[in-house]
Structure formats: structure tokens, C-alpha cells
Length: 347
Image (cartoon, rainbow, N blue to C red; front, side):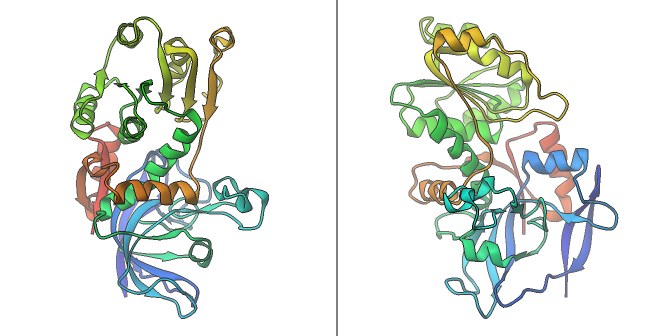
């Protein structure tokens, strides 16, 4: 039996092809994919290539996906065929200090679906035994769309950062980088009681999409510092989140922040451009707290799914483009040109 899949063979070499449906062992799950979202990581892997991926070792991309269990191995308990689920992609060893503290996403032996092993841009995915055993497979409530279930992985990463930068009721929050992740940060800030939320981006089209997805945010394209000071009577923002891969945005963040402000570097920089000159005196005299975050834990993944299930946060408006898997290259083109917010392949 064959299935359709999008496999990466190398830099800018993504092929839509028929491959065999994966075989599973008695302690694994076969998932029928219903929705699979494009992430910035997928785009970077396509544009730059990926370690271990070549003509002889292609990889099915996508670590954000949800679907229906097609088959559960004989030794699998707690899951059954026909069950709606979404999958947290990162699996640690389960026994190191990071894993036992609940931070398996920092495990030195981490393996991720769609990054190290075949992921969600396929009609079926083999969910490894470790992912089943460690709790990466999460039941998806009937009131959550498959698209939202797929996008929850990105939402969980935003929530990891949210726990670090903290938003208190009444805070003024600035998010630089108005993609899907930027709006997720805005939604979390609103949930926490922020009084004003500014979203900043170079693309007016993207800002327009953000306003549709989260009404009430203040969209700012130009003169960000001036607008922040205007909105805060010169005090600056309590929280500044850099949700883009731009050194200039990281440098500007400290000037935007208020006394005792919190700054989070959510977006990493490309290799070779990671060294950034910063005015540390601003950090010193403003008593700023500066954090960085990456990936998310299984707790973050379950928690954000609860927010969606309970209607606290709605991320369906972030899904601006739905395309069949055969058109996945179009989804990548849209992501590369910042067209829309979240691109999702639907099955």
C-alpha cells in the first residue's frame, strides 16, 4: 500500500511522491494525518538543507500535525483506532536530568518527528514507541479542529516563552514579528490581562491579517519607538518579545522596554549572524530581565491545548491558507514571502 508524501532530498529539493505506508511494531501507532502545518523550521530546512538528509536519505518534513489513529500496536494501551489526536514532535531519552524534570525538549538525545525522523507531510505517519510511551500523543477534543491541533505545537512554544517573560494585568506588551507566532504571543498577553498590545512588522499585509486574527491589537509598521512612547506616556513597554529572526529587532528591544521590563528573544538568528552588538548599559540601568526560549515541553503542549479546548484562546483564525498536500510547494512559497499567517496542508 502506498501513500502521498512530501520528502526533502536536499537544499530546495522537495519532492511530492508515492512511498510505502509505514509498517508499525506492536508498541507504535500509525496515524492518518488530517492537517499538517508549515513552520519556520520546515522553511529553513528547505532553503538550507538539513544534516543527514540527501539523495540516499530523504526526509518527510513537518513537525506540526494532527489526525486520526489508523492502527494501534497490540502492546499500546490508552489509544485506539479512530481516536482523534495531535502529536508533540520532540522525544527525549526519558532518563536524563532534563527529561525527568519535565524538560525533555532540552534532552541531548532529542529526536523530533519531521526533523530527524519522518513527519507529517504524508498521508500516514509512524509514531515511534518512545513518543507513545512518554505521552507525546495527545487526545484531541471534538471541538478542536485538526488545523488548530496541528498549530498547537507552535502555540506551545509561544507559551514556553510566555512563562519566562510573564505578563501581568495592565502590562503594555510589544511583539516584533507579526507572523502566526507573533499573534500567538499577542493572544497569550491578552489572556493574561495586558492593557495594550502592539504588533510590529515590515509587512502591512501581514499586519492586516493579524488584526483580523486578534482584533484590538495595535498594528504598527513604522516609527515603532515613537509609537510605544506615545502609548505609554514615555515609560516604555513592560514586555518586549522578538518573534522574528532579525538582529536589528533584538538591538532595538532594550530601548522599547520600560524600567524593570522583560525582554524575550523568541526568534533565533541564522548561523553566522548570531553575534549582535547590544548596549548592556540599558539592561543595567533599566534593570531589564532578558530571556531566551526554544521548543516546548509536553506540559506546555497539553496546557495550550486546554486553552483551545476551553475556548480561552482561539487559534483557528491564524490558519489563513489550507491546501492539499500536492500543493505543499505553494504553501512554502507563501511562507517564504510572508503571505498570510499559517499555511496548513489538509487531507
